[in-house]
Length: 399
Ligand code: PMP
Image (cartoon, rainbow, N blue to C red; front, side, top):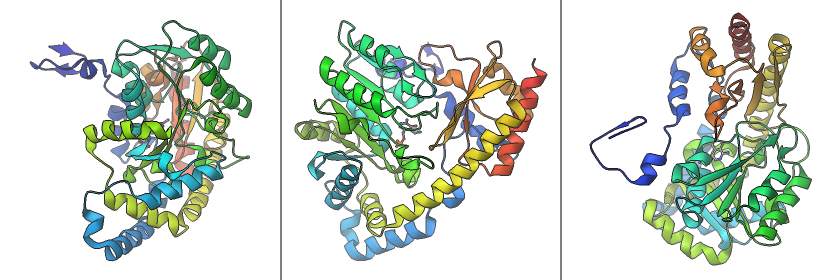
């Protein structure tokens, strides 16, 4: 049997055959070549990850809890309590009982998808979206209705309403409210309120996938969609990956309390539980007040790097491209002239030792060949400038 990259004599499940191989995974391998300036990744700045602080927290947990920190155990209540208080600080009424700890936001996406969606049913996503969201919708055999996203105000609410009117009714919709991956745009407050009330009006569960809101480096925070959730249709997903470190593999879901027992059983069938040691260590980090210090430093670094990227784009590609101007997060989305194809330019870019992700990799139903996602967080400002200069040269040569 040959399915895409699968060449096997085994008969595979339909879920496995629907899943597309992640181009990003292949492209990210390039980031390990030290000579390549990789604007392709989505990683926080490695040199600012809190290694020493984390080591001290883990030591403290092992000294305090001993073998209990190495046992199977239920979700760590002090962490659920910290998260509930954090959600309240964002304006979301939330109790610790509504908080379900996951292994990152991706597991939250996978769980809600498996909770609500069967193969062949309808799901709604933005037309350009993080590949992990595609994996839990199209990748699970859903029929995906897509909605466009405005580069300044976020997902189109008229299109969302139209999608909600579809028969059969969508089983779920996914939106990324802040510093969208890959578009870098945030949904306006007005649209957040609209999204929540549309979900309630049409009875469609809405997943608010929010790994990036703590990464704001400019402007005032916007309330999560969940703050407008009077109907109780919004599932909020948070993550420690970007606000603390991806290797924690910890995130959370705020779900209706009556669904938590079902979600718990579903999750048990996958990996039983998140690491006891990691939950306690992250909780120690948080209760020492280290998150604020870490985020302040990270967001300052991101701000400087984003400014370097935007400045370099203006200098080198000002006449050939337009791009989104993020006020947080990790990405800017660049659109070149219509007749340029960023897949075709990619090989030459790598020869010139610069990498990016061709925007079409994020397009659910194709198109967007003249776009690319650029990451600014894990490259030093001088290298960003050099990378964009090389990129501009590649683009100009192709004209
Ligand atoms: N959602 C979005 C929008 C993302 O960009 C990512 C990671 N890049 C994830 C979810 C998954 O992140 P994690 O599982 O590490 O929390």
